[in-house]
Length: 209
Image (cartoon, rainbow, N blue to C red; front, side, top):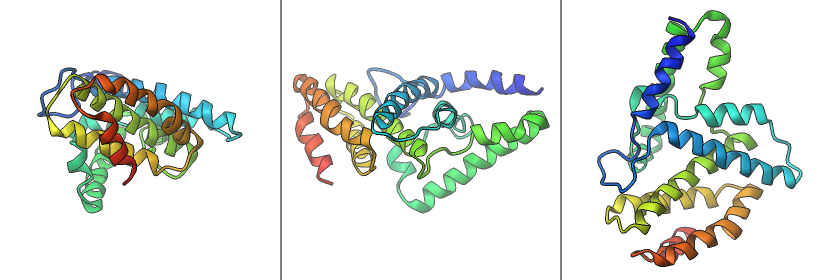
């Protein structure tokens, strides 16, 4: 069926709900998450450029817009489960990458296969673009969890998600991370003062990890 099959498959990302099995005031699908990650990433990259860092914008847009395409095959696995151990995370990644590769081999015309392999690869690596993707991905977890906590959602999953994402972000050495911690996170905490939860305490505890 060619590239048409790929285009049709994108609808599936609208039906994969993030943080499955937990009560949420707001449902978020994978396609909406991917769009938000692109928005975060381009602003984070602008901050890096202002500090003299060279950005490969083509690579950045490719890896951020497609970073969760593989969830079409395996769904969204809860963060605490996915990162329970390095071995489990590695196994899940191998399954996901294998299924994406099989999909490309079976459905994408040969002249485009190398392009699709590049675009649909796991983009999180030690390059500045890969690190920005990691930060942007975790920022969306922060905002999704924060929205639930602010509304009084008592599911402990969202406190775990919020803490885990902040810990991951703060340990990435980028200018945009320092900007997030110094200028954006304080606004989140301030807004969180109206939350039933002590967002400030949860945040401070996470940043001490």
